[in-house]
Image (cartoon, rainbow, N blue to C red; front, side, top):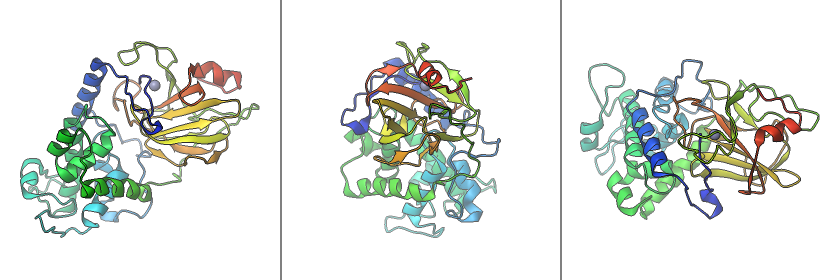
Length: 349
Ligand SMILES: [Zn+2]
């Protein structure tokens, strides 16, 4: 579920999104922030995995829950933010008066504080209350900043640090050294908190062509060329999904990682792989990335986790899925990925 957009990281950041699509995306974020459409984690919670042993055990469930409040947060982001805010000190107190694990200022807590553990008191020094409030507040900020240019997660984090007013005033991450450093540090810390090798990986069957299904075991949830409110000129890829748990996404064929990072609409974890012959396969909406630009990947090698980042309604039709495209050249014309894979003897369902 997404339109043709250009990669922010490619030096050309033109988001071709209709006002209707923007409005719909905004509504989805707000609805999710209210908690009514948070993705269902009951199936075992294999998505948004935290690296084992990185979060104190007594707070791990709270971090996992807060990290699924809306599509702009993840458990790794919540954990990285706590690391940056307080270094996991539940009694942390900043010179400015911010307190606790998530470093809430008294005025912010008065407006946002949540009794997340249901003990009758919303207390910023109670780690479980702080973590739950942090997730909800992050999502409120993201909803408030819908439409601001740049990366939605970066804008959200900057607002947590400098206030949403300054992000709105500057139309993005404000040029404060502290705020820029805050966003940069959390991005770096997120890598540490993300499990690079989840245990429940599906096994890929490599076809005689040397290629394989990019999401092993998945079926098509939206065909190439389908029209919908977001893709009035035709869905530029194929949506593949297994269900409500995020499984590993793998390289469809051997190649070189040409891009790995944020791209408008595709989310913060977007990957493009260049294959011999000039074809490029692209992987959108992922929750995490396991590869870097320039890396040689084999067919079937895990490159990230299926997710709901970017222009996706987590609980909507399709929900969590992989948006897979094939292009001739990086950002070249789209090919039909279904016939492209079929020609390579890769079985689609
Ligand atoms: Zn799609």
